[in-house]
Image (cartoon, rainbow, N blue to C red; front, side, top):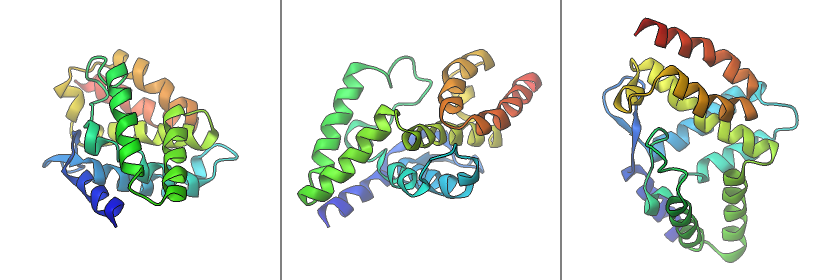
Length: 186
């Protein structure tokens, strides 16, 4: 129960992306739920060999570290890739997954580590979905966080494209023309 109550704190972590109607910023708990639903719904577009049940488990766990480490917007200059952020998230994972019985905590931590490393087909697809959801929200909200962070099409394609394409080429092929269309109109 300590873990479950702690996990509830994820709803207090505000993200840079707005919800689909643009009325407010989403929180990390909503993001995790939305990603799990993305995985379930977009499973037919996953590369061969991907186990959607494992992907959903990763996506439900992947942002729990933000309870301690906070959310770093993807387009904030260098912050998400900084050694300090990586270290803060590792400490958070140790504490949060440490609230569980040892075997369960070790299993959840292993899924989180696998997601972070993004080396298995499951983790690559999960990471791709984590990068695929925000641009869909940004397209729905007239640019959303792209406007807030002065993101242009080249920067978006350079930073985001390879991360989606690596784990979900079909999804990148689908959204890339929509992104191009958005930037052509502004």
